[in-house]
Length: 255
Length: 339
Picture 1 (cartoon, rainbow over the protein chains, first blue to last red):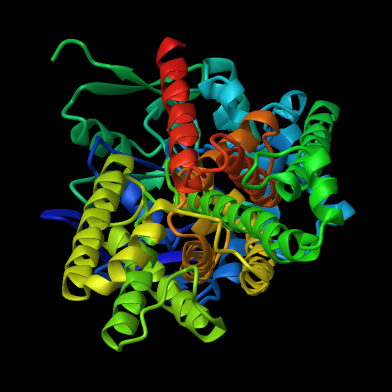
Picture 2 (tube, rainbow over the protein chains, first blue to last red):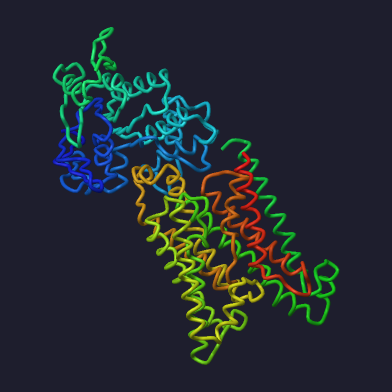
């Protein structure tokens, strides 16, 4: 069974129809949602994460409506990383990553050795162990993003929802993030991410193309029909080419 | 926690403990003739020593600390909950709401022919004042948050707080116009004073601290999670509406109690958490407790100064905290602009 499903989901944000009867079954593996600005990608991710109630339709988690899940149990099933994740305050990096254990610990249980080990692992995976005693305001944008990613990994959830996880990351850390996602997928985690960078998105197992609050196409990264839709929703401003046996989106400057 | 953080927190705890101990002694020594240890010994040995020290200065000193602790706790909780470093009982409308509640009780008693004031209120009247202040504080916060549509926008929150404060103050003026006998009680109340604090006040304030500090501390991890933003905190499985309700109730109770016993005392709730974060940045578990201790120490210091600065006259402690706290904030703003 698909872990996460949206059925006929519609969301209006003010006078804008952000999502219009969107249906999606999130397949195991890594799925990337792509599309131009204002396509409704982040809104769809928020709806799937239970952070935005749809005006119509429903979301199912393991076949059960999301709204029927107790919030903590739901949080143990899905970890979420916000777009340009905000974070303020005086917590150290380690204390912040520790918050990822909240769904399992609740507000009142002290962390066990297993929780500490999971936090260590998450920081190691996101490559932020060296700054664990520093505070967020002492870090660069890319470093902060890795800390927030570690916080999401520390939840240890079977579903990982990432909204623009490569924001602020330099190319080496974008590559590291892709490898990390691939390792998570190999370990059995289902990853759903919104990505602006099409070349990174074309490394995902499946792509969902959105425009105008609707899903225009779904398919594997090598699907020529999907490439055609993708080129179309970006107004012909890109071309998708195979380079070194990888699919890459290039800007099309001749338009 | 790094060794440096551990040391900072230890230093702050030791510093606060030492300063509080010194101020407690100074509070017992401060009287209408200024303050000195010799004077304290002289008063202690005198025929009215038990009365002056045991019934006037000791409850006043302890009460000042407890009032400051409640305000410090309310400020730290509000700043964490609303993720806004300017959130404080005053700016959120809870103090002006509590003040209106108190004025309503003063006016009702005046209209009933039994005018009371903070100085003369008996236990029953004080319970009434506490209840009215709590209800008013709750109403003030809720009105401000409704008007500001939440607390995420600093400017909107500040404007809403100012509007609620002005409206509450106007209503309070209208009430005293209808019941002029309550004016004197209101005046003393608006200036903020620790002079009316007796043992019954100390009991009420202690109970308030017991009812607000442990629950707020227990919910401190939710405040930590809120530093990630509301959505992220929600995604971590927190029942945010319940957490918010419990913490707003805690802020209202702490502010309501402080205001009902000592009147309007500005800036302690705003400055105490700032000082804590500056000297020992930490998780909210530590910040809440340390802000309560810092708030207590600040108000105790202001109280001792208020009694000693122009003895035998007293400066209203609320005026002094407004001057000192306002000065600190101006310095902070200037420093930020400079950097």
